[in-house]
Image 1 (tube, rainbow, N blue to C red):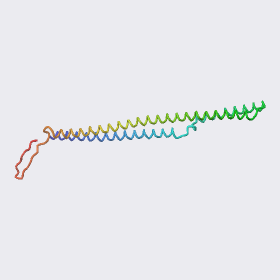
Image 2 (cartoon, one colour):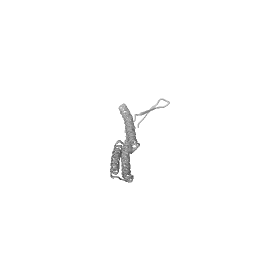
Image 3 (cartoon, rainbow, N blue to C red):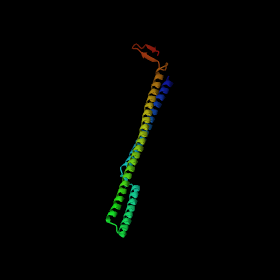
Image 4 (tube, one colour):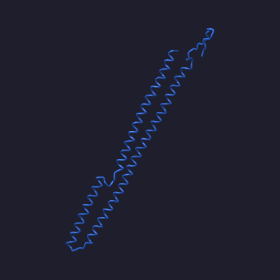
Length: 182
């Protein structure tokens, strides 16, 4: 009888210990997932906030293009002066350079849009994965709670069932002792 009580107490104690450790593990998992969410948010903001045209690679392309156009314009102007050309020919050259620069800027804007869509897709993919991890943690938590409750019920039920309940002694007023069998 005493052994059954000790066994039941040990089973209840181990269930409680397991539940506490499970809760601690769940909190740690939640913290790790939140850290990943924060990191994903920082990454997203770092990629989306800056002006795409201010990136070093884009600025380098624009600088080279301006240098090329200026060089072409100076050559066209020099040739025009030597050949006796008019300012209109130089203006046409400048207009062509400006159109080409406008086309370059339009291409950069399209690349910017594609870049931001790619960043958005990566962010959403990572966020979806983190949501799935969160769901898995919540499901594990629910399973652990159900298992702990089941173990507690089994421990108490085992004590109560099968004659493991101690004999109950009832003492009456006139000191007669009756033994009640379970």
